Amino acid sequence: MNRASPWILAAVLAGCAFAPAADAPTSLSVLDQLPADVPRHARTHLTLVVFPPEARPSIDTVQMAYTSQPHALAYFARHRWAERPPQMLQPLLVRTLEATGAFTAVVGPPLAGNGTLALRTELTQLVQDFTSDPPVVQLSLRVRLSDDRAQKVLGTREMALRETMQQKSPAAGAAAANAALARALRETAQFVLERMP
Image (cartoon, rainbow, N blue to C red):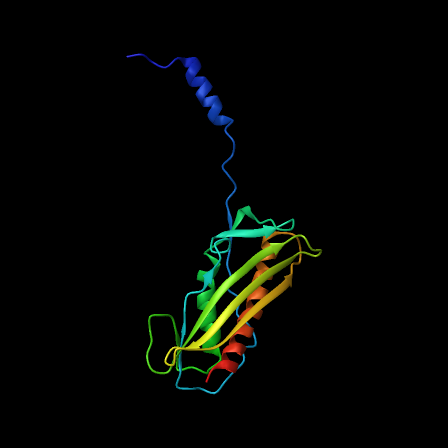
């Protein structure tokens, strides 16, 4: 049996000693901010089903998007969302609409039946925009309320929000995204209360 040369062993150990440090850990951010001032409504007999939000492929990812030039999208290498934004959005929608007090229950599918309204949403934009000064987060949400009993659309609304970032950093972008989302949640609740039968 051949034994490894002492010179080879020394070279391998030297290579380990001078190996580059492990990659820096990825920073994870969450969307978890609820609106402080949810509109209220008297309790009804209605149940509201909040369907899982949809999103464009560029948003339906844990990658955190930004733009530094027009018509271009990029993603941070060391900063990500803890979950896909649509996944984080649904429980926030449920909690916000529960807080209105208007519904017997606010649930996810597949519940259906008498007295059921349905809310469907699509997140169409969530990006940190460094082309403006100061930078902003752009968040766009499309919502549709329907009466599934009557197979009737009660209304749709598109929201396009801009929230100023405190500095040019992914963490500041995540904070601004939470503030914009809280505004969008409040507007969604107001829309639902206005359009419900």
